[in-house]
Length: 411
Image (cartoon, rainbow, N blue to C red):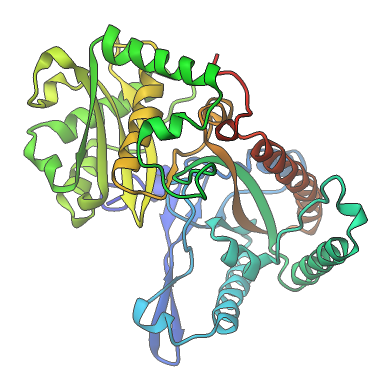
């Protein structure tokens, strides 16, 4: 749908150049490859690399990118046919992935392209392409020789893999909600109140007050409309596009990546079964939902037990304090608990707000090859520093998780 609607096209900086993986004459997989003319809509931010390249007289664009346009969600990026996947060992899969990486490196070098990038990889893919993650030592680990020996071995392995492939591993942070009650043997939460019970008393009171002001004082209700039910409500798809567009128009940094045609194509496709609209409207509008009554909401995807939160918006002049938190977090978490989903990934940004509301930091992986030796060295040094800081921050914030009784205030 992204390409059919021209959202991902050469005009928007996303020139599709997908490749097939052949074994003998049989196609066993595919790689979603784009030639990028900018870094928009990627969410693994390399603008500082592009700026450094520009100042050094190096062309950073075009570049090669393996990923899904406008989608900051982890998943397999080198895709195998399901019927052939089971026929390979883990070592065999790793070799194929490394062959793909080598091929893209050669394509970049032979065509004067600045580099090749894999965004939002699984940890397994990132390890196959660029070696295992080097975990900084925690305080006290220095006394554990086995821990030290293991981590040194991982670092040596990473260095060896880096020399072989020249793909550098990057580790970024997102904030994810886990349907796992750490006070009850990591079992899924049964109710939203059980989830709230994991917070400190003062924070529980604050959350309940925050929700009450929206749902009771302002008389707002939030309905979830999922899958085929979306087509039952005339004009709802178009209204959700208006809501998406409202955020683009309000924010100085807002960029419209998607079009009305994309929304309509998505709803008309089989993929709509994975769509979930969270629709905010006034309770006084009645029990029956009508598209014209919806003035705020989010467009989400539910797949493989994960709730992927994407675009939030509220029509101009209809803003309600804390409605963003209610729609994007609290009502969405209630939906996840009710439907037994294992995780919620609300996308990039807003780390402080998310962490204070029980979303703990999660490591996100990507792999990068830079053709220019000097720029590659500079990026590698940057990534070593960034990785150490992000891993340490992830460990620090996880130890102080809001759902373990720690964390910052909601203010």
